[in-house]
Image (cartoon, rainbow over all chains, first blue to last red; front, side, top):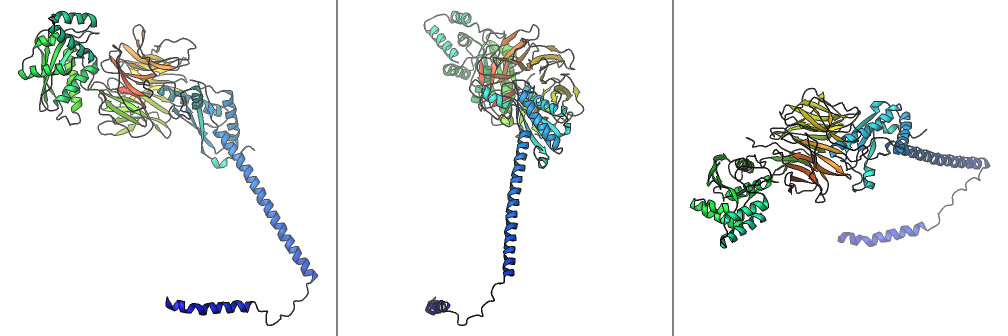
Length: 200
Length: 438
């Protein structure tokens, strides 16, 4: 402790001396450099331009790749969304309505271009029917979607079905606005998600 | 209880003012249409006094027996502090004063004394002024023993038989679903505990001996019928029809077979398999793509009732146990959106209870098999999934009358209802067969 504080003034002196020295002009003047040669200037400019061009190209390609990736991701998202889009049913019915059919048609287009993709269809019901009968009704709703897909060329082993009856509602109200949201088939991608690239 | 207290006041007043007690009793007979001798007649309820009980657990034993009689709806329990005081005095003097009990319109007096694990029961016929039945009944150890309450229920059921000629239903249990478990509860609302592992479970059913239950459980690939031994907790799945739906099991009355619903992509049909769930399953219904669920056996096991959507929407059908001779049981109007489902065949074979939608809300109804007479039993809230007690008179069912789903018990004869469970979300009840039937 005391040793260090005794040393401090000397240290400060040394530092200030060094700073004073650095402000002094150099003692010796170096030999002047040879004048610039036009060829070397041109070469240097060309080199700089080429670097700039390469960098611009690199920037462009990154932006392009980014845009391509975005487009691809958007397409993939859109395809995934279409594949998992929920379809809805009328009370105590497994009949496919028009909008359900067009949703299934969109799924078929994607499934045709992605042979490795597999789907699980889960049939659900509203709370009104018998708890037990609703399991069978949910099964029938899932089977109706599967039948539509297989009737349109999708192989049966790519679609498996399950019923949750009224056990997994998405809306918990006790009115038609909740019931209509619960009478549904949900679609889950169970295999081949990496194959999905979107509509060609 | 209030009635009997009022009755006692009347009797006391009658005594004070010198009105002949007999005339008073007769007047009450005509106004209330009850009070008879020891022979039970439908629509009448004999009044019974249960004396204070001597021996271990005496006070609660008396309370249990009185509550069992009350819940049985065949006996009018004559109670109240003044009556118990009188009973206590008579018991102390070991002299039953039949005049007092006759004045109170009691048909029978029940005196129980417990020595160790033996309960000595005397049932006195008040009109005949003599002992009508005297028996020793075994109770299970001390009041702290796990099966003690059930053994007292069994005794109450036996006493009910001596008094009314009909065995009581106190020594029974009820399975139901709440949240992610199957639970069991004693018929008087005590002893509730889970009897399944956590999962998505539905549709519990009893084996006739009450040792085994079956229910459906959501597994990875669909629904399995699970058979569980209650004593050991050991369980296994029915594997005859793997995958898809395997739901709504029901044991046959002889305990040999299990009927359940299996569905894949072409509708859901009833199948029959051995009660152990092993071996091949035999298909019972040919639904042609429709749904056939919720089977219930006739008491002789020869016939089935079930819910089927074969006519476009669910109705109750009957068939032979092999699936032949299918007939529509519940009448419906073409185009009617309301439907009928979840049959349960009454233990006496005469009736089938089911649920029927009125303006989209389910209510409990019964239909006679002989002439298809339909009787509506509930109207408050939504009421679903009826299950008969072994007396063929009481039903347990899911009711939303309190605003949440709970299991209620209804006396189909008097219309009296009581709440059995007290935690929201109870549903899908199944009443056991009697554990004390002779």
